[in-house]
Image (cartoon, rainbow, N blue to C red; front, side, top):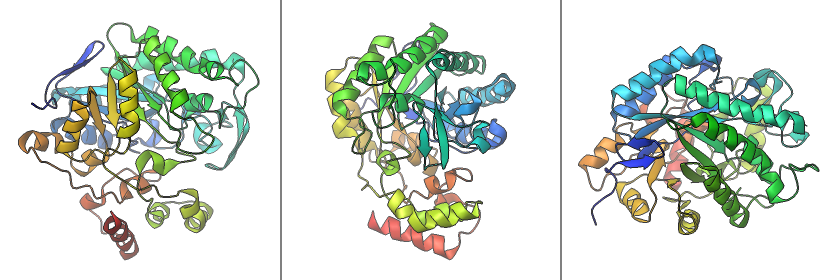
Length: 407
């Protein structure tokens, strides 16, 4: 069977040159919540490496939606910098996408400027901080913030937006019974829990009009007991299909409850704490990190079994993400009926991996799944340990070697 990998694919008004997308993995390259030269250079390198579309990660639709101090915040002042970035991506022949979201309860006043807000009030150990549940009369304005961000993305030259409705962020917090304990019309039944998502999608699709592609990242499973399972998430997918979304990106996990269900493998705790500046957090995570962030074994295409069930049930375009490191497996996924594939770690390890797959039928990237790149991104920019300019301390080298030897 001839490979579909290097054939064009269309999502709504957007056609990509091939079926590869750089997934919206957080780069941590936006000091001051604004785009940097480092962010531009990284996405330009991925575009030059042959990707169909590269997605800028996790731009907050409001200041209250920030979970990191090196994360994008969509506002008019950053549009010129984003336009430079999209121009650079387009000059290399790739499309430019941006992920839009709100972190909900996973923030701290020192970062988001207010008491963190979420679907319900409570205490979040992730920060740690108290959280205020959003009032029903605040939700229409929050939904409109997503629509305004779509318009800002268009002004900045992006071809598509990806709405983040998974991984335990705000929309996901409304969807999941684990985090939604509301007693009003936005809580209880799944129909009620989908109301906020419906409001967001109405604003997004209105703003997207006829010239912006809209993808939605959603969970197939939350990845822990008491979270959403496919019987409910399938209904979410069907609702998104009805909303007019041009494609779904099928993922899973909660970054606050089941982070390695999202990413798989082991979190290198010593590497993670090495870059932390807060002394009590550093030593706290070093003491209890293995318990708080349990390992989940990595295997190639780890979401495929669940994703195939969604492929069988839905007619709309679906994008597969999760553990793709070889052309053989990417061809298999595309032959299973997925319109495109997303990758992140493979492209951090090798920005030109797509071009190499064009040249080599059996191409496989050199990512060895130590997750060092993820461990450091909470404090400094995302980077692969294989390409660092600085020398790593021996204790971090040993940790990386141990984890890679297990893989």
